[in-house]
Amino acid sequence: DQQVKQNSPSLSVQEGRISILNCDYTNSMFDYFLWYKKYPAEGPTFLISISSIKDKNEDGRFTVFLNKSAKHLSLHIVPSQPGDSAVYFCAASGGGATNKLIFGTGTLLAVQP
Amino acid sequence: DAGVTQSPTHLIKTRGQQVTLRCSPKSGHDTVSWYQQALGQGPQFIFQYYEEEERQRGNFPDRFSGHQFPNYSSELNVNALLLGDSALYLCASSLVQGGNGYTFGSGTRLTVV
Image (cartoon, rainbow over all chains, first blue to last red; front, side, top):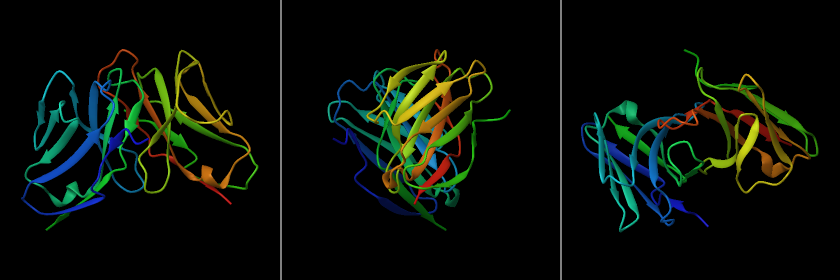
């Protein structure tokens, strides 16, 4: 049972445009959501998070939107840069940021120069 | 400031053997979690250690065991290795009272032949 789903295995975007990565979840007990970026041969790197009491969180070029009624979150990257090319994982937790994380399968983002 | 350090980086073992992977958490962190990432999948939670005890456990068999030492470092042991245990094993550290999520290491790539 996949509780966190990233239905797009890959996404290609032109440099300077917006990248939108999507994530759906099924467990209504999740109360904290995170996005991680992963380059080959490296561990996941924390990007941005959002608590279930909010519907939006911004950090520079990265914004995460949470729609609790739809059990959906998205990561917007504006403007996209070639260095953003990586695998992006959505993760969810049922007990705050340091409880166990349930990850999606990832989306490979390719930003074309 | 050293992040999370894992050793070894790569390992090849034979079916039926036993393996020990090691992790040193980020300075100041007191909690260590282990994740298994199979090819094409997101990381899956194995277990989490705090105060030298297992706090949470994911859906992994008893062949997977761990330990946390007084200096917060940790080991992951896998007995009776199966071909399906081939994966990237990620260690992540955090503060039990912290709200900033996990810091991941670069992982140990285990290949079982």
